[in-house]
Image (cartoon, rainbow, N blue to C red; front, side, top):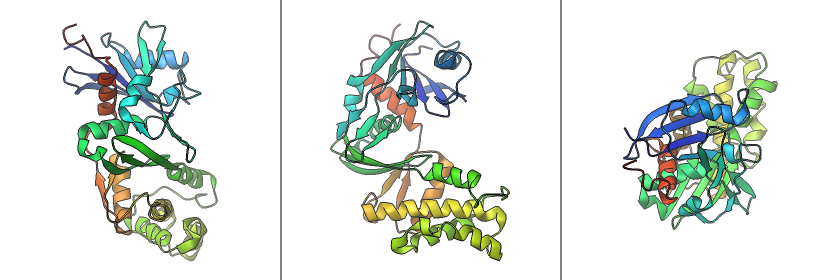
Length: 307
């Protein structure tokens, strides 16, 4: 089987490698724990060698934190508004010791924030390749450690905002009095919904003004210790949605398209119901599709179908 492209989604905590077939489908996937902040002895070059070991020699396209200032090679940002076909004309290339050339997708910068993203721009490209009708006008949410609220207009990323919901949850859970001594329990949808409602009803004070209620409720016996994490999750996600409504990142009149891990997206859909918002799941490996789209636009696939 001919391999016309190898794609790398290389973030701060993990590396996912894709070997594509001639039709742009993913023939093989590898997941490695080598993010840009945690690498094996030998650094990026060794992590890369493990990711592509035994795979045919083919063009390599990478996106994500591999192109950050602390990554393998910095790829300059493109400013918004930015048409996604511009990504293909701004690749940064490096030759690594294994003899393969790696092309890195640039990130995006929103001067209005300022705000930046790396990796999500490739997911947006994949989503629009899958659903071209969204290119005219769409609202996207990419939940994760750093949630990205993205607005697409006329085939371009018009702007975006980052909300550090996931990282804030992790910090509170592991390093604050709210999570101290609290054992991990099974998912508690009721506690999560209670947290969402608490954020929704916080009014002008916002969800941060209700954070300590997680401890007060536990001390009063109204919230089981094992349910504290789910309550906090609901409170933070609910506050993110409250902000989204206030800032017009989301509206009850227009659906928001979710791009991310299934379990996390399901939580956001659950929370959205409390705010009267419509969140639509996005199927498929959007990041991989984005890598294929950018590679094709950059001419990396030319002349390879009969190699």
